Image 1 (cartoon, rainbow, N blue to C red):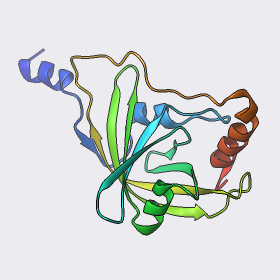
Image 2: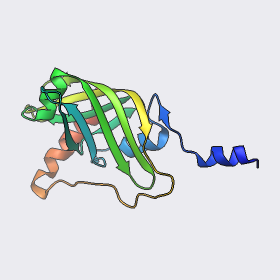
Image 3: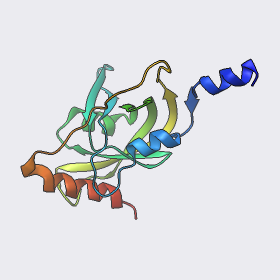
Image 4: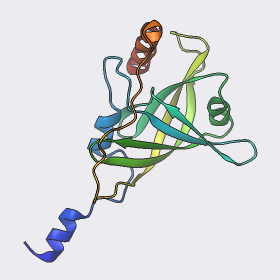
Length: 164
């Protein structure tokens, strides 16, 4: 194998127009499962960045993400006002990406809970932030408290079947 081929094998991808398969798999959770925590960055009215963690985000296709958001949150207000968003995911063993996209409200009131909306994000650009010299041992995962398990299961199922 030539040096150029060795370098090409070692060099990870840098950017992509859609989610690569390993990233898609990390966020594509069927059967109501809660995804690894994603960090959404939105823009406050004064132009300042705002971040918030989400366990509801899932990949529908390599070019489409979906999540639910409470109407009273700053994130929801920001996404309604200015749909520009960046989403970060860190997932074991080797997924660390930022996804830039455009968000829109596709269901103002979830059937499962009228105080939540369904948001879709069109993926515009994916950047690989993974350092090839390390391995991610654990991602951030959440679990519903026992009394809220039925709520999460219902909300995640609605996200999964939306548009079918």
